Amino acid sequence: MYLLLVVLEDVDILPKLLERWHAIGIPGTTIVRSMGGYHAMSWLERLGLTVLGREVEEETQQRLLISVIPDEELLEQAIAEAEQLVGSFDRPHSGILFVLPVLRTLGVHKRRPPSPEELAATAPAPPPTTERERIRCIPVSQVLAMRPIQPAIVHPDDSLMSVAQEMVRHPDARLACVVNEEGRLIGIIRAQLLASELLMHIMPEEFLQQMSELEEVLEYASLFKARSAGDLMEEPIFVHASDPLREAFAKLHKHKLPGLPVVDQTRHVIGYVDTLNMLALVTAGELPPCLEKRP
Image (tube, rainbow, N blue to C red; front, top):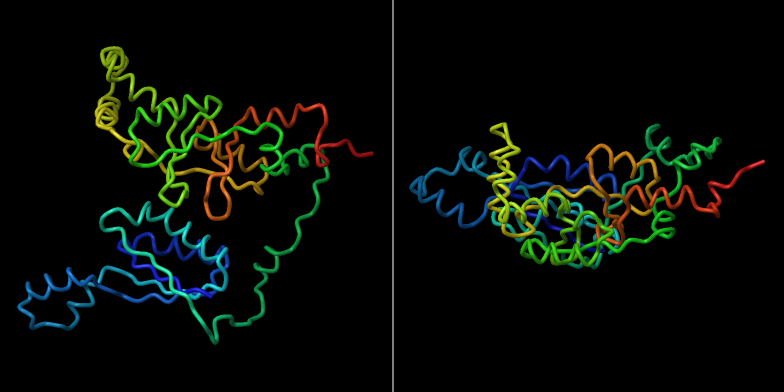
């Protein structure tokens, strides 16, 4: 058993974090208003150390999240979800996350009758009945097995030239996966965006000639200031190996991405998938069981 404690600075992400923790099976979370010590000292000095009423409650912007987690696998998933929403706990004013061992607990798991929605969610899905549905239900893991592509892995502090060199070493991956110190995915960088940023410094006139709108010029200016992978990365879009082919295809088109990182339950990158992977599977001579013709 483990005690997970998170001091959260940005309370706006609290609802989303609780939603994700509930979805992966965190038994429960206690939320406490809190205030950092240095912030409290400066605030009390400002008030002359005299008023400690409602104003204190209004100033406590942090939230302390406390949860007892039964096993290490679930703990790693909970940490991964928190890191993804926060971005990185190494950033200033992001918060703190730490874990303590728990020797004994009482009352962590409460038994209650499942709701109709929960019963529906746990019911086995009906088997696909048409060839089209069978193709749509192929898990991403089978796509990886048919045509594996090694992902390009970089870190937020890597220079853009280092990112470019890593992507050149993995030419089949059209985006770079940005991971934190623990190897968890925190962002992605599109190859086209990286190439544009680097080539801007060499051929700025060619880029400026194509720009007619103020927004395009401002975007160019912001990219020109990028110096590291962290400056250029965007929100991570990914799939799990167990996700169906239809979900990967939908995300590729929705976000107009050249490919997707494939992650495990703790958001470590284990592969890369794109439309060519999918076509390799669908057009293969020997189809997997879910694609075989049925009598």
